[in-house]
Length: 111
Length: 113
Image (tube, rainbow over all chains, first blue to last red; front, side, top):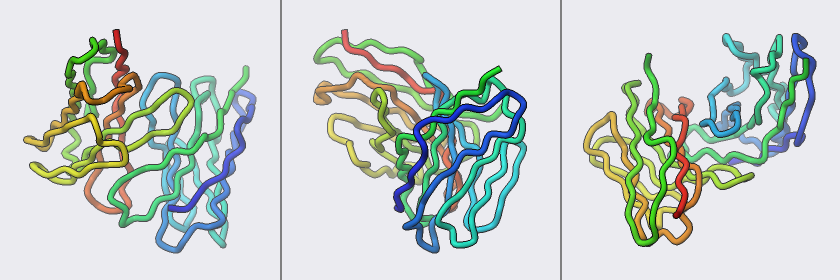
């Protein structure tokens, strides 16, 4: 599975959009991009995933660049409850299931 | 509500004792997984199961055992052979279609007395 690079930390003002970048320059054609977040002492929460098209659900939007070498997770109106560690994961669809969580981005939403 | 339930939330083990962590899901998912998370680190796969009565070792299976007798349940036993069992244990499940995401329970924190 391709390696991902994320900034270690970011701040965002409450009510504003949070844009979390992820670099996956070695991604191959059959690898999906998944985003999870983990609040301290809880299990990771699935947010969204995509292959090459932009995706949107009730939690967030995922923007994948045309060359697929990077992506951005967008939380449109961040709240204090969105403070968490956000993980970007690239995984081959045929993989037996292992998710490789890197260090992620600690997002701090401030009032 | 559908979800994954892990119990207990906190567990203490004496030296030389086996303990079993429970994981139950009512999502009708085929595949189930066990991960271990150490402080400040990512998740590491212990075991996974794609169908009932079948399971596979992950990256760090030594000192652990599992069973999958029912689709809904995938208990993990931490045996006395696991020399460093203190960690946060996470169970996940997914539909057995290759791009489907895994969904996680809230974890069990195991400590040694």
